[in-house]
Image 1 (cartoon, rainbow, N blue to C red):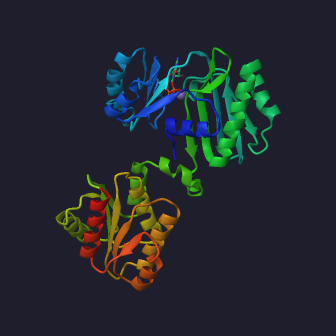
Image 2: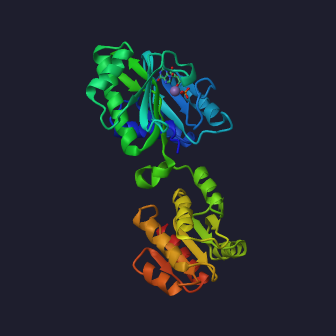
Image 3: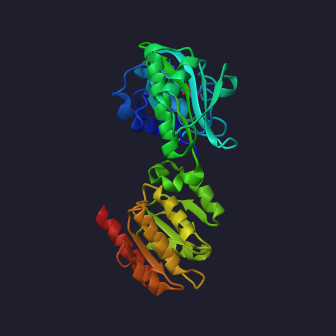
Length: 370
Ligand code: GDP
Ligand code: MN
């Protein structure tokens, strides 16, 4: 999983690696909420998973407030390598003396971490000159080694101290978050000689994300949707606040109709087409957990193909892991449904004998919560 720059920088803050003061805005109303707090000049940075934003014109400097709105609009509408930004990072500009390059990556072939540093950062790593590549032990990274890295770059004094601190903290981050890559390009040397991370590129090992529930919020809905499709179910996002999970297109469509007739507004539906396991239902709930607008989930599963106890287990796991907190209204008929009922009896999931009862109760709950 590739983190966006601002997400990487959130981890930097957690690890006490200095970054510029910044704000996020997804749209004009969010922009107007932060506009008055900004100290100009600021740099607007399109949040994209692709690199080379500087060259593509997706990083724009605003000298004064009047430039903010038009440049923000320009970035929101600018596609880079097929990608539109989901959000714009607004950073107070810093006065840069010099730019360095630093990255740590998992060197699978060598079964170790390697560190790349260069006194000439700022551009693509391919064109960074005088790279120094060395294998390091991130578990035994000593102050002395971190300092020697700075020395190789020809920096000294407060800059060397500040840089080696970043190396040590980044190594800690990489180890604890199980990152495959953490790159800071550039590390900016400020006029006072201290170092600051101006950019962040972090890739977390997909196979280890299950060990990091705190990183789950960074999984993008498009990635989840892709995974969902790989798991064999279809997912469609709608405008309302009720998520519907069902098995079979016909059942899901008629469930949508009943919800609408009862005055509810579907916000998404997921169709399992029968291949429901604990894992796929959990994945479905994970997709739904990304939709902040969802206030309640309706599960309508019918037929002997579904092992309802497996569905119940996924629901229990999702609550236990803190992935979802909204109530689930379920009609689950199929094999082992008595066992499923018993499993869910002490959870936030309520079971009903008919889908009409489940929907009527759900719609009533949404009405009360408004
Ligand atoms: P990338 O092109 O996607 O790697 O984006 P970066 O975040 O690395 O920004 C590209 C370049 O923009 C940097 O190397 C800097 O030279 C410049 N830049 C970014 N933020 C600032 C800032 O706050 N002040 C100044 N002076 N330059 C900046
Ligand atoms: Mn960069």
